[in-house]
Length: 343
Ligand SMILES: [Zn+2]
Image 1 (tube, rainbow, N blue to C red):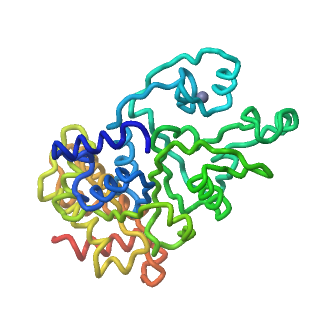
Image 2: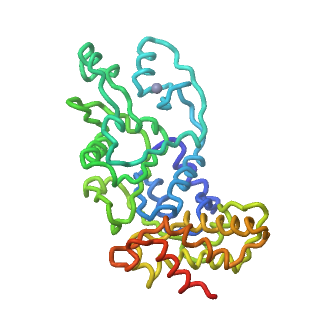
Image 3: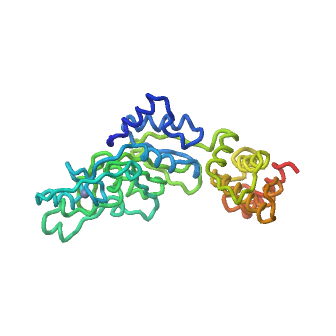
C-alpha cells in the first residue's frame, strides 16, 4: 500500500463524498475500483477506449497527499530508505539526501503497452561494466526503467494486454516476488507502487489475452460506455469545447448523442467491430458548432449534425467484416444518419 491512499479513500467514504466525481455515472465501477485499491490490490479496468480510465487514474493520484522525496530523484526515493542506485550510493557514502516535497498529482506515471516495449524499457537494465566490477547483485549495477518512476505512487499501465508474453512474465515476477529478471541477472525490485492497468474488451479483434497467472494478480473491474443518454449529454457539456459562442440546443445535442449511441446498440452494433466512443461524440459536438460558425450562424442545427456526421464519425468507427459497408465506414455512417435522425 502506498502512503496516504488508504486514508484518502476512507476520508471520502466517511464524508459520503464521491472521490471520483470527475467521472459521470459508472457508480458500480467506481465503487469496485476504490474497494480494490483500499484492499491494496492492483486493478485492471476492462473497457472500451474513451470512457475515462486515464482521467480516473490521474484523479486518484491527485487526491493523494504530498510526500517527502529526495530532491531531484526521478524515482521519488524516500530519504529514509532510498531505492534507486544513485540515492543508495549517496547514502552509502554518508552524503545527506536533500528532501523535497511532491504533490499527489506528481505521484502518477503513465505507461503505454505495446508489442515493442521490452523488459529493459520497463524494468531496467544491467550495466555490464559495473556488474563485472561489483558483481551482479550490487545496487550500482542496476539502471532503473520506466516502472520505477511510479515508485510510491500510481502506475497507470494503458493497454497492458498489448505487451508480449515475455514481458507479462517479467511483470508477474515483479508483482509477485519483487524480483526482476533482467538478462541473466535477478535484481531485487522495489515494487512500491499501485498499478491501475487497462485492457480493451476481450471480444475486440487484435486483442491479445493476458495470461491467467498475471490476471490473477489483479482485481478486474469492467467499465462500459455512459449508462444513459442523459449521462452522455452531461459528459459532453462538461468536456466538450464551446466554439465561438455557437449555441447548441438540447434537441441538437440529443441528435449527436442518439447518433453516437446507436452505433453501440442493435441493430447497428452488429455492423461495427468498433462503435463510436465518447471521444467521437465530443468531436461531433465540436464539429457541429464549427459548421454553424462557418456559415455565419450562432445556432447549430440538426442539419449540421447530418452534414458533418460522416466525416466526423467515419474515421472513428470500424465496420465489422459482416457489414456490407465493410470497406466504407463513411457510407455506413450516412446510412445510420438517414435511419436514425428524423428529417
Ligand atoms: Zn533515488
